[in-house]
Length: 218
Image (tube, rainbow, N blue to C red; front, side, top):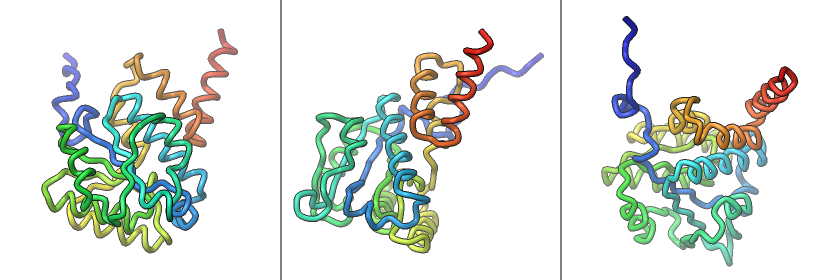
């Protein structure tokens, strides 16, 4: 007799979409210009756009924040503003976003227990709030491929420092899989494959290939 399928709630080590809040920090032109650890700027934009669209699809509360948008950093990249039209953006002067009470209040207001962070740069705008939130007892996850550092060495050192402090590194594809869990979930299967096709490079090409081949066989 085959074993029964495990319910999502029985696997607590995998992130449940109902438990998380997303904080996107400083994905702005000024920081993007200096993001050197990413394979290329477009790959980075694709990754963070995918993350944002996943949050929208799975109804994950999302907090957007920028640093000195009018005087230094510029406005958030248009791809994020298109995903969240009319969404409030918390513009800060604090380098460490967790020092801003508005950020902490916004996270607390969601009632979610796990905080997912991505931002530019890894060594500053991700590491500092991740370390600070972790210190205050928040379960923090840093999305390493939706973030980038001013150099590969800076990115890697920041990730290692966060790991040593108890922050968990994750990737966009990893989160996508943990949120979806089962390809039989039709309500998100189509939209998630469209996100993959639009933004995830080779994986997206694979989705397109299968779709076209299936049509040809009908």
